[in-house]
Image (tube, rainbow, N blue to C red; front, side, top):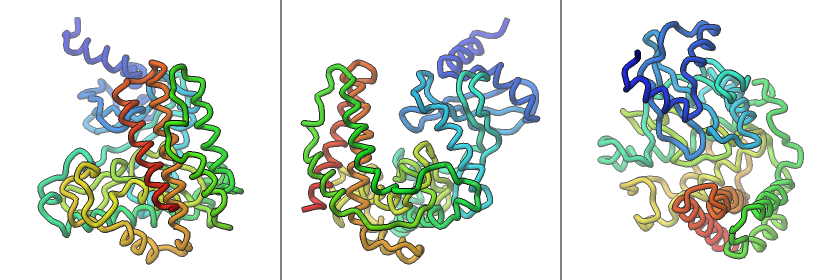
Length: 355
């Protein structure tokens, strides 16, 4: 009989949606080691998808799959992530190397993929002594962050076989209507307080439609680019990997820069309460981020202000979805309240930017 600790671990993995025995059989078919899966550990990271680190035959792996309670697009999201990671292998975009992907849903109940563990840390969980002790290193962290999306946006998605990943035609024209419909869909959740609590939601939408850039150069976008979705090297301010690719698509890469601006602390000396990484002093200003990107792209960044406002609009509506689910008892109330406050903050920022 297996020890109680092993039984408990197996139960936890199955609760998280990972059947270790089924996973081992699948890995056998892929030629990925043999024998038992050892040291299985659930990793923190994100609020939805599951990350499981384990070893087999002396090699370390990280499995990524959707949450146990699947949404309509959960499996397709995993397939898209794996497709992009496979496509950008060998490029200068820092990312977790893909080992293998399982697009089928009948192995562990959902599509999933295996990737190499990243040797790095996420700055929002705490800076390491080197980074906490040097303003110069922190400045380099900010510049490296921009270089990551500049490199991603410079890739030729057609040459990488990513045609069909997204719909670049009329991408900018579709954005406001797409996310307005998303916000309206939250009305299906009983108890949701509605869009009336979000300041300026219609005004921001109208401004975006009235000031939309006339054209753009299509490319790969990460879709949720900020400090919580990257990992840094332990020995420098360089990126170790860009992670959490669930919103990746083909669109306008300038939205990644706008997203970074929408989530970046405002002012040269921001309120510590509004900063997720501490200490903050030394990080570049938003204007310096834009200038650093400008020097590394062929794209026209003169309308970057518009992309920042769009990022506030889109991210605010995405976060409001968790608040709506919490109102209906489908997500934790404290999480819903926290994200609702962030939605309000994003729309307040957008209103300041449009004047």
